Amino acid sequence: MKKKSNSLSILFAAAEAAPFAKEGGLGDVVGALPKYLSRMGHDVRIVIPRYYRIDVEKFSLKLLPGTVVVPMGSIGHQYCAVYEGKLPDSDVPVYFLEHHGYFGRSGLYQEDGTGYPDNDRRFLFLSKASLEICKMLHFYPDVIHAHDWHTAVLPVLLNTSYRYDHHAGATASLLTLHNVQHQGSFHSSLMDIIGISWKHFNYLELEKDDRVNLLKGGIYHATLLNTVSRGYAREIQSPDFGCGLDDVLRERAADLSGILNGVDYNEWNPSKDIYIAKKYNSRSVKSGKAACKTELQKTVGLPLRDDVPLFGMVSRMVKQKGIDILAEAIHRILEMDIQFVMVGNGEPWAHFYFGRIAASYPEKFACYIGYSESLAHKVEAGSDFFVMPSSFEPCGLNQMYSLAYGTPPIVRATGGLDDTVENFNEIAGTGTGFKFGQHSANALYDSIGWATYTFYNNQAGLAALRKNGMSQRFTWEDAAVKYENLYHLGVRRRRGTDYYVKRFETQMQKK
Image 1 (cartoon, rainbow, N blue to C red):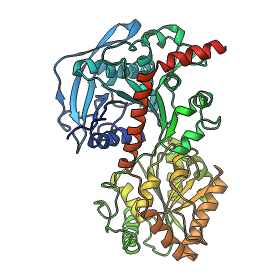
Image 2: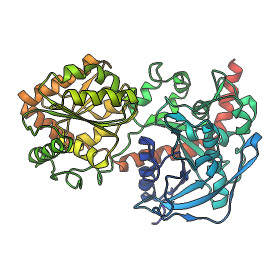
Image 3: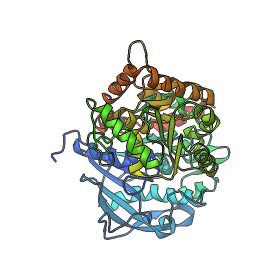
Image 4: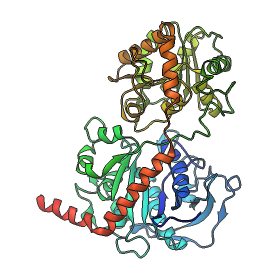
């Protein structure tokens, strides 16, 4: 591809990238966005760990000659080999760091529900190796795109020990905050392994509650910041959603933006979905969904009824996803003449609780513990409504999938859910779903009740909701253009002034 005159060299550094290693939306972004940036003419590359779940042969990974030497402060230099692969359906190189001690494990972050005790060193190693690999590749990135706490130390390093580095000294940084609840908080001795002056262990930069907080340091030092929705960008500046970093985020508010994730409509598209009983589009949605509903009921063992609304949910069973208020409301919900399908896993209590609900209401409630790609598609296509009662949701993808499948979502008005779903207006026939504000069992019950009433008493309104939702599009092409603008802004700022040194000195003087 011919490069544009304003093309950039961009390095993604992250703990996940689909399809190689993924546990959430972070993996989706890193596995998708670089493809679209590359098609726009940018030189985009990705660095992630070579977790041992990543099959070298399956992905045709090639071992590169040479070794990356990684300075790890007080514990000395460490080393890793590098495998190279490509993002599927693209020419985007992906570099996998091979280090048995750090990444030769069954999990990405934890095992049996417990985080690895050396996660601080594991992801510091990932961050530093991401910079050092540039020397091996003779790659001079204009921008390093860091993601969440795992690589949030990169902006710190770019402004300190790598400030005058030949390869990375002029590099701008963008830190994407996928979920500020997870911050990378560790013992203060990590400062010695980071290998920068202890003067950076202060209330403005890396110190929080007398511990090193990697996300806080990244927020302070990054050239620019963004989250994965405009709503979440606003929310995290408040005490309710900022998880103790709201004051830091308010300080950087002018540099913080929200960009919605995109949807892969090649995968999530009812007109070409290989997993569902009958393909359909907006013109054939009624008959298509009827066939898919019957298939879903057969698959999960519910009675074959087309005369009741079927509610679907595919989610991690954790408090953030509203599993607690669903548990509180589910008995009352099932007093209505409805059916409910739940797919997911998470906290052990939820597995047992909803398993008992399924045993108690076999005609109404089905529960699949685990994740099945084919079943997730069947739920989106076969459900009449999709339930997402999250306490907070930085972006969310299932509500976007639901809109594409003509399955009106029922969501709490928070973060990306609020940004992407328009509340149903029964009189005007507008809207794409049902929203509730208060995070409570009563609010969830009322919204499911509203959707149930609509199914039984307002088929024209339901048809409008389906049509309106299927007309929505949230594409990676749109997101890539917005990220491109951020990258160019970051480069101009980084090379135009030593902004961060001046800002730090000014703030210290105020104290």
